[in-house]
Length: 342
Image (cartoon, rainbow, N blue to C red; front, side):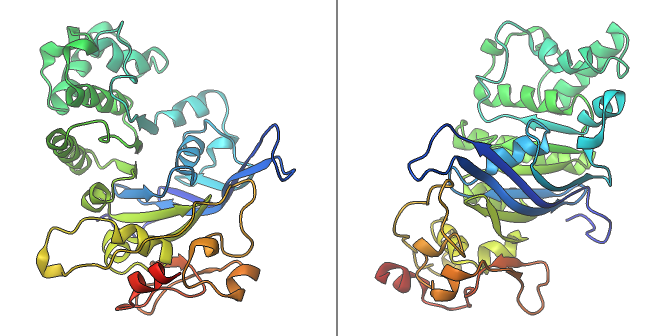
């Protein structure tokens, strides 16, 4: 766990992103994909980002990569707003945030060799390795760093397995020496045994290089294994954040508790966790519920939840464990019975 006393590497406050759609049944053509997001990432840590499909995880990742421009809020990376940068300053900043994609088969160009794929970023950032000899040497170093052989540089992606392809994708992300890597479901397309190998590789690289990760995943068991802190998203909002232990063992938001109840627990000593079965579907982001956005599926919802949006709060002794809920979960609460009865 990195030292949290120092200023965070990435600090976003009130980040909002809207999209305009052609038409909607309710007459509203504004889709709020991100609604006043507050989030930070410390140097050298792994932040797990979880939530249902459509909650805004990918939009948040695209905004962090400057592929989308936010409509409101502040975005500070190492104290600098990258959206204010231009020219060479912007080009230099782009080295610091890189991406590893979900599908190792679709994310690599089949007409290029592994060496060409890894070295392609240097065609834009020519000052890093100006000579062919320097580029060749660095490609070999990166291949060996991710557990491949230096001789693999001349092979095409079709000659590698899925796990090996993802290692090439990781090497490409490391080619510019980033401070943060956004990992979008990086092991979901891989076999279980290969997943473990790639996750161990990512952990080893983090220990050696000090790089921070934003790890986006639907697989809670994977997030629990790799994340230092966890942020839970629902319908465009971050509804709970905390350490992995806090969020998995002592979830405070009912939605988080429902997610964690579905996560397998292999240790029988921990006891059997009651499964929470939510009713209904996630509301449309074109017409979100008033007040608390989760209230239409929550067994604890009251009139207050319908009229007033909850503010983040934390329990005694855990100031960094924040949840947006009027009626947070309590330890020992029979949430499974309540959820089924709702």
